[in-house]
Length: 615
Image (cartoon, rainbow, N blue to C red):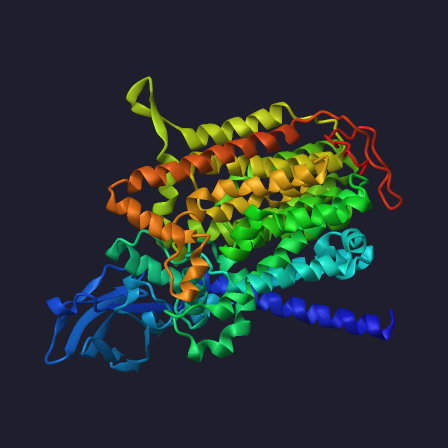
């Protein structure tokens, strides 16, 4: 190896070690957190000051003189004396067992009305318990990263591995990719959706040392908070939190009630990076396997990365699900050569699914793909078992275990109001005591129908592509029966790439892309994501916000909301059927010959429509 190669390898090893250290420390803090005390003064006018420590009963502090409140709290099994001085509604000092503690106002970093009178005090402790867990996580992560890096060195993929291969970039060129970032930057002047404020505030709270999961576990049940600031798993917070440190030096000037220009720009660029990674990875896979002509690569890229539905959700509304979408897709594509990519696939799939608990409903389809390929490929069964070990370990450690153990995350999310939507649509069966849940029925039907109609003899690339499509089918099935938040719709981005590949002309691409916006009608035409919200910059009330105000004044708000949801529901069913047809399609054309393609398997069975222009 040359000196330049040695230097590059050393730099990568150092970066992987630092990344492992970051993730190990992050998740060790989830498992064994430093205890925090939260004071709430919302009822100070009634003479009440409440003290909270997670997994302990709230304590009402009693007046002990002018502006003085005292009480006894429990932390780590020990009783501690608490004395607080409050003047004009603001805690000035806090002493725990006589030791003065620093007070942080939660409202300094969030505009949520629920935490206006909430203050955080670090109690410390648990460092000795946390250290061995952090060490174990570090060695686990660093070991997996090194194994994946060795795979990368052997295949000589380099950074191209982050977009599967270089085929798409070579076919498309750099200008369209740079254009996508330019368009995202220009979109900064389009007013963002309602969620960016709360999710960026949550990241800032965490970076400033306020454990949001302890905060939620303590305060949210007490105040009956229905909409949590942060509803994702720890891996999502770790993933988006890392690049957010770029903005950390600006936090002294951060104003939670002001427009979040910097956060908006950062997350737009980050989401566009992940969208490009997703689209380019799938296009590279199609080109490499001879399933897409190079002449069409740029067209498919434009219609995919600027797909109105996904672009609006990820770049305009700014939702965070692009990270698990990218990781999950790339992990599935890497399974096409499990002997060379088993550890890389395990890392990407493990991190992707661990970002969001709802991705567990996608797991059966992915597991069925893994089982099918494991049964068929006898020579690679050892590699499949090693992949399964790495993937299962990551999933257990970073998604399941924090929810199983008595962690703040477990306590915060055990009664999350949003999870109850799964059980809302139900109808009685046999008797009024037995109810059938429509969402569960829909998910079971979608999965079993796909399994029992699966062509187990189809070539491996087609098995993977059908699984990618099935993820979108399951997403639309669940969303149509629960009307979930728009972030989950980003799962459909890879399916839209395949829809653009299947389209016979550009007019058909335009139709399939543009009409997808109907899926989010209930957000586009309501204040939460009003498509005309940019009028706020000019001191004007957005059009559809005014429409809702007029409808509410006439007493027809429920009718208007139901109408919008009905349009979205119908659009979701149409795209569900459209994608389902691709899953079950029969071959009507031969795969495309490609000079760089893998040998074409005659068993390829996917609908590859012939375009009118021959492309």
